[in-house]
Length: 197
Image (tube, rainbow, N blue to C red; front, side, top):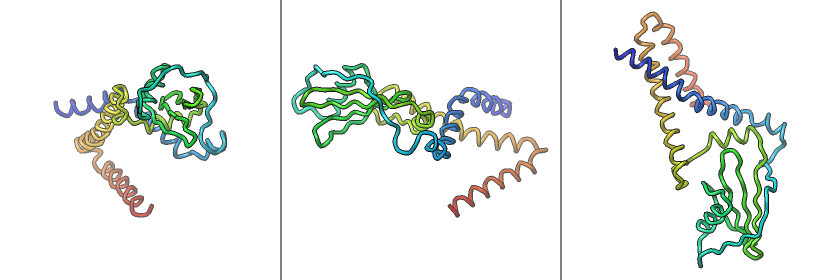
């Protein structure tokens, strides 16, 4: 009974988490073969293109810090979400909105209240890398936290796959010798990489 439960859990977890595992696999390929994409798109960061610009009519609280200002700007243009913010030497405030599909850069100039909104041009490798590196707990946004929890669950599932795979291998006596060879071969290769890279 226990063995059947382990096998079924192993299988249904694989089916449920298929999209996550596929995307992590593809994103790792994109990072591992970055030179191929550089040859296609050229070196340097992914460029931005102008999406819209406007005169920002909102007012900020006195002595407001950058986080308050950036959140107010993002909310007012319908782009609230995970972001980073900096102030340039010329006084302009630059907000980088970390959207998975279409990241945006908002540049606000307090002197003339000009707000420029740019979106990152689409590149498949950049999207895959954003997916791979996406974090959630530190942003303060509920949806990002839910994403981070789901990633933790994927990690737990992967550990379970290893343990349940070992259990299933040991339970099938006909495969123990070949399975042991595979286990020792993988562990040996991994140890070699650790010692030599």
